[in-house]
Length: 72
Image (cartoon, rainbow, N blue to C red):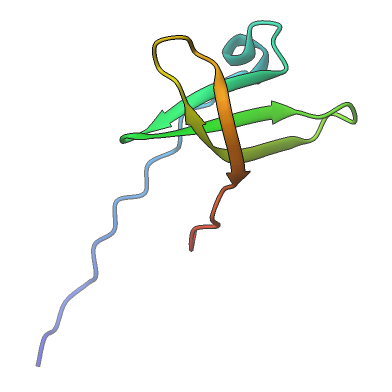
């Protein structure tokens, strides 16, 4: 039988201004590991994150698919 206190490290996530990240663009490509994702600001100001297949050499987006939701 284990006794003691469960230790968790709670760190405050970084606070990043979206305007600084987007730099005036409505779409940006974010890379998570080897996978590209497209972050889009809609006309109503909502954010949409979709999985994106991207041609790295030209930066042209070839297809997008909705990103899978994680368990977070």
